[in-house]
Image (cartoon, rainbow, N blue to C red):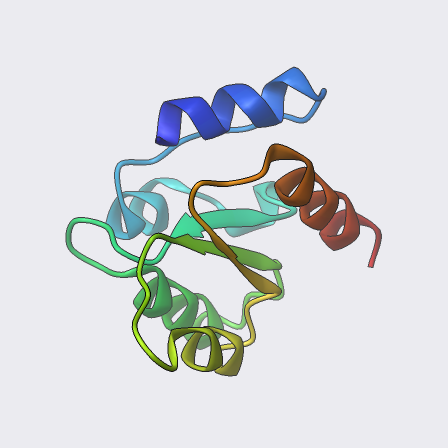
Length: 107
């Protein structure tokens, strides 16, 4: 899924990088190098929600788009409470993802 999303975003002219998980992103990334973060909620190790909380603790203002296949009751409320820009459900509609990325970059 990560490889496919990176390919999709690049195919629309954006720079994109993929990371195996939240810990890898936080360890390798200089946050100022990113204009938008797309993360799955369910990942090995740190969840997308935990990643967003870690970004908040670092005072990051980078917009975060979360994706999930989960159907837990209240998941959208929990995600939006973190300050994430939106929650997209799998299967991802490419146009919707790209619209949210474009919106995040222009806000």
